[in-house]
Amino acid sequence: MIDFEEAFPAEVARYICTERLGRAVLAKKELPSTNTLCTQLAEIGVPEGLVVVADTQTSGMGRNGRSWFSPSGKNLYFSMLLRPDCKPGVVPQLAIVSALSLHDVVCRLSPGKTIGVKWPNDLLCNGAKLSGILCTMSCTGANVDYAVVGIGVNVNMQADEFPSDVNATSLSLLCGKELSRAHVLAEFLTVFEAYYMEWQQSHTLAWFIPRWNECSCLEGQYVEVEQGRELVSGVVEGITDEGHLRLRDASGKIALAYAGDAHIRKR
Ligand code: BTN
Image 1 (cartoon, rainbow, N blue to C red):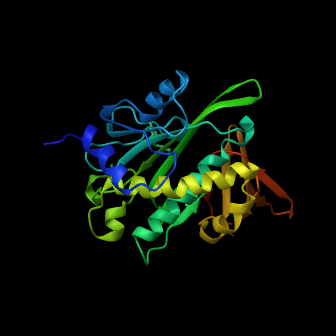
Image 2: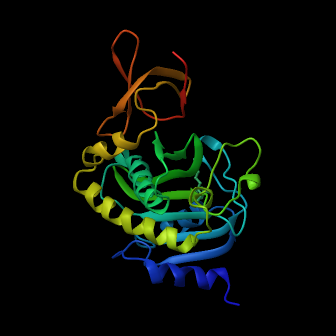
Image 3: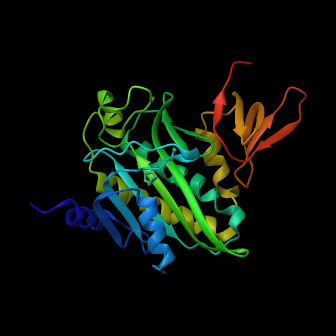
């Protein structure tokens, strides 16, 4: 039997239609975290486009210090190595570009289902989380050396396999059938490469905003965002070209949320 480490990259290669991204795929049966290995490889000069995948992660990392549940044989856990020619401040936009790329793929794979994007970069179906994105970077002075975009997608999890305290769903629950993880990855990389090239033209989200607004599940909702020690709240009115959440407060003023988790609240 051919093992995951050989079979997975070969299957991605069968489906992928990119020029650079994912032309090198390093697949490992088990890793602490794909982001950690991808970062180590970035540090020794591996070129843009490498994708690191694991069948299971023993210390999968989520946003804000949380962990990412990463059982074997079920889901996609991968990290992309990017070397964008941009200033550090715009790199977090790549998480939004990634979320929109994944949104395109998931909508195609599960026709008839309503998939929403939740700022900053989650994909949800009926409030249940389908994927998560963790973007890190390294800079020298004012220049970005590399960015690592790590993505976890719930692909073939069944409802009773999720931890009881998480509200999550999977692609197979949406489509009613098992999916090939390599196929989902290849589809994602193909869309993401095109979007990444578009983003590289301006290093803003201007081109993406109409798409984002169409599928944002926070639009018009009253939300609170914890930003460090500060709490920003208001009714969501889209995102800015820089990827910040626009919130209109009770006095009619717009406040911006830059990072953090957004919670929908009753007014
Ligand atoms: C989130 O908290 O929503 C972000 C989760 C990101 C998880 C992915 S799985 C692949 C990559 N490796 C990690 O350790 N984390 C990211």
